Image (cartoon, rainbow, N blue to C red; front, side, top):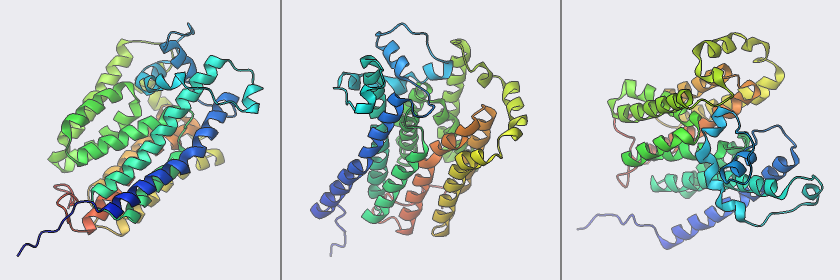
Amino acid sequence: MNTSVDSSPQPHSVRRDLIWILALVFLAVPDFFDTYRLMVLKAVSYDDYAPLLLRIMGLTNDPLPAARYVHRILSIVPAIPFYFLPVLHFSSIQESGVSQQYLKASQAIALVSWLSVVAASVIAYCFARRRSLSATEAAIASLASLLLSRFLALTGVDAIAVLTVLLLVIMEIEKWQIGFVLLSCASIVINEKILILLALYYGYLAIHNRRFRFNAVTAMTCFLGYWLARKGFRLPGGEFETQGGSLFANLLHAGGWILTPRSLILNFLPFSLLICLLLWVATSAHADDRLPATCIALSAMFVVSVAANGWFNVGRVVMHGYPLVIAYYVICRAATRGGTDGKVAVPDGLS
């Protein structure tokens, strides 16, 4: 008697997944317009990458921005194709007096940021479904990704960094080692926060389980490559970021602003939210090494951001770690299902 179960996706299940993915795209559409308006109207203070995009394309000869922004060049290059799209005009934008080139560059960067947010939500959903979570459980993961992205600076390159973190964690879980190495190397010129976060995360895991040593060594080696690039290709701006003494001094002088009401809202609230979500997941599943690893990585990112003079951007920097929370949720929910398809069991050494 054949007792095997057909685990192939059923047509109605595929249709339901596609409908939800389409709904995610629709839900995120307002984010693009809000981001675009904020950028061109200068409604908030933000890191403006539009001049760098124009410089990369050879359309201006403006001076290069500070070093850390130039070293994130791979976060800007994907915007080049979108520069050639027609510009969306609003009455308030037309009255702002900005150049057509600047509008096109800002729109391209806003579009890449929005696509990264959507991609992270869709990938979170697909990853959860791949690990045999129900459509409802997978929808929770995707909605969490979409909502937590609101804490990022979508006017900059945060979203593409968070998407990269999510992809790297999925590659580790699925044991796609070549992809993990290649994307980690690319992260050197995507965003340094990716490598700092994963070096902390996998560093802790590697101490308790040798299976993670490969991931820890890869992340740490790539971060060393970034640091050497900053030291070797010196550009003006942010010199203190590679000097240990300056970072320690910033920590000592953080007392003047770290506990202000503004800091409590912008810095401690996002950090506390991620910790609460982690603990919520842990209450309904067997806790493993990923729980303390995520807590330590998020806490260390908080301290690193304070040391780097993050001021009221510390919470935003910590929020780059929300893919770790989503991955933990998916792993825990999959573990409660008992590994029905051979994919959902907790990774070796974590049970």
